[in-house]
Length: 287
Image (cartoon, rainbow, N blue to C red):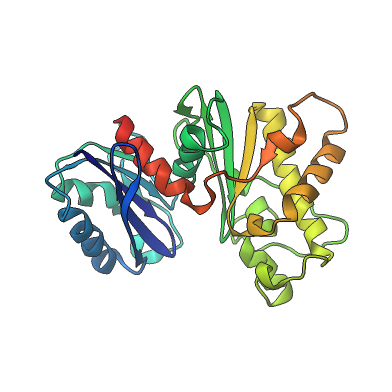
């Protein structure tokens, strides 16, 4: 039986999984993201037990990463704030131990691919996926290919207009009031001293949060006109958020362009938190 491997390399943990050819997950484990010296041997040992039947591995990594196959540092995690992982050759380390085809992309591209193949992007030609969590990232797929150029997009750092009732300056050390700086989980915690999950549903901040996410959807609509925009991540676990985002988006777009029915156009992931793992497995299978 052919087996495919997935590495969802996150800033907090590495989630490793293997699946059969139908992408049914056979085993999944996670290891803390500490240092390469501590984390990578655990990852390698996990896959070694499947080496006889392992056909390919898909890797979706926190970034920024070098995805340019012509670059000398292709496969590296580059200028991450996680100092131990700066300029670390994660793909090269895996290649040392496994002579297999490997796909290498961002963690959010992997999640986008999972939704494109198996979730709310299935059957669509153009899909944009955002994660709104500890950070904010985005990935876009057109006709089965990731939209990227000299590097991968950093959609989470597009600037947003501060809400009139929000005098917060943002938590992003590079840009202040970018989308990540204003809307990611740490920005909520910095404002109120509690995590978003502990803010009541009727807290006035959620309407402000929705305007930032709606600005993201507005910009995405006007720049890329995708068939669907999917918002995942911990912040979107708040069930009430998607309706607030719909309302704020329709107010912003103000009838300027037509788009699909908003309830079908701006959605949360069908695969939930499995999008990244299933995306990496799909990328491995497609190799």
